[in-house]
Length: 419
Image (tube, rainbow, N blue to C red):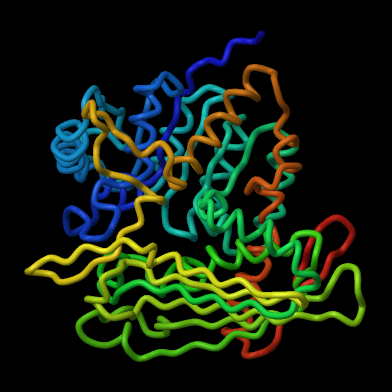
């Protein structure tokens, strides 16, 4: 039996999802101690991961980040080592420091990318071309052409490339996918996802400049619908509309043109029946109320020819009321932050954790010669190849908003293209 060696991992991005630290201090969201860093620290404790490094743009942030991790992770969980190598070093500021960090890695090691949307493609391509396995947060890329390039690069260099669509590992969503297959032809899908206006401050550096709320939030449910409709229907046409006026005014003052709420309407054509066509509506907003008791409102509705499915991921039947802040709904199925009876981290069953662990397991298996990267395309996992239609819809939506026209999606040979 080949040996499954421990994996060295570079974390690209030092923000909320990686560390729980934001530009204004510790996050006030449901990710107060992050997801990526915490998961990797625990996987190191469990013997799957070895050397960890972290790269950002501003090296001056690292002392505060280290203090935050020591206090809130090492100080909260037993046997949790939160050490990591930093890039750039010595407090330097370098937007290309990811290249220095990647250049010191060896082929077969892994890179996890949680950076602004516009940087995903260049970082992922730089890593893949050097024989490194990649997990990139959603959206994988902003352009469909870039997504196609990553598919080809991952194939050429024989590396694992996953997109971190963690909702595929939510047991409710995966069970709903199985049930949707019993409902016959697809007819209608409606998804809503929002976050409070305070996110405009968290994302001030890139909101409306480098990306939009559709790429950031609708990517979740667009991917879920693409996953559910795999082998049932394909998207053919996208029309987008947007609401504006909150993000660009006081007190947020985002750049001119920043949308508050974006809706994409997508036509889907049945694969098996010429007469069956479906419609999907995906809406995302980052101007929701501040005291709704949830960080992310998220629900969707699916209707097939033989039945329907409704999912509310924000309200799981578990709420807590505090005298000073009121009622809040929690979702420990995503990340469980309370420790185990022994004082160790106890969130290994959360789908936020599982999404990262699945990638680590796949890379270790490929490195050991037990599997090949293309094997994972066959299992419904969010590989770069299996997520191409998510990017196609998102890219088409952005074009529709900018050019005020419908945008078509079609397959040209082996590649999906826009028209």
